[in-house]
Image (cartoon, one colour):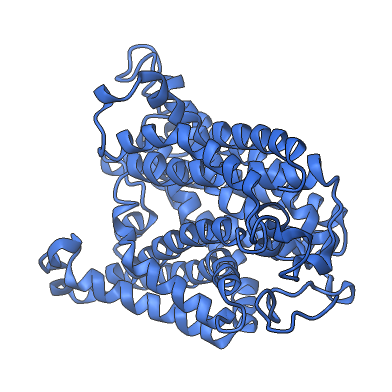
Length: 485
């Protein structure tokens, strides 16, 4: 590949991985997904469905189905990474152009910043709850002004945030070490919680017999599909982030077989298992405490043994730290580096991720199950679905899996398009986003439901699917009509 003379399109992190360094096997890819899927947001994902009225089987099925669906674009987008050794932002150049690729890369990066903040909030909240056991005055503070949290919560959040940034600054080897110890740690913690729930609730019978709020005679009778469709979209949206930037990881895979089978083994199965732990423990809290506790940190604080509490919370913090950095730093660091490869390194990109993760005030995103699913997960899926539609349409329907890799790294190559921008891709992206925008604005209370046609409000429930389909079709039509645009 001809070197880029001014490094405007390449640096060490964005360059293709050479074949001799593509060493990840099926089990390496599967272990990656086990490590990333066994996390507290997965637990909260499942328990939030219970909190909104589903029974355990409906919740686990919804999560499993959503992950089987998102596995399809995951494997498809991973193909180019494995075949050519290129990361996500470089792959975007094939459809969006050498400069236009910054648009989907930054969209993905900002979502990752939100997730980074959420994970930091979870870890910081665990530290806050530990400290509160030994220093009760800490948890009796007033709210920190407009932030809506106490000063103690803010300090613990920033402390855990600083640990994350420190690990990022130490580099990729520290991240790899954390991932090696993290997966078994959180799985063990989850199984211990499950065992406690089984014993305290009197077996799985009472836990799993909790009725659905959508059953006849229950408070939400006849409303199951109204909730199921956006919930399924939210489940797809949960990993819609990684379904875009999976080339950042699949570029290290030995073969297409390794990346495809590894992902199929690691993603849906781990999500379903940890989801079951989440719904079982959440259902048990209803029996044990008479109230539904959908946050595992709140469950752990009910334990009276301080040693058990501290060990559990430390394990949770380590596991959250590892997941956060692997899932929410690697990609945005590359994406921010893509803006200016000469000046922005992996470390600098990671620091930018951390700063934005604080400014987004993540505690507000996970305050309630309704907001977690409908505002956060479904909301950003409306943005990421269209990007996936354009990328998959370009790579499979238009280019038939053939890319000119050297040209991807040249400002004057075939992927320059119109001044560095792929106009068909940008039009298709906009076409996929716009139909979901009114429903999103209604959901966040910017617009009243009475000023938006009802069908547009209901269309928001299908945000990822609708955006993906529209962008895929529009892009194929435009590219075939304007092949050199």
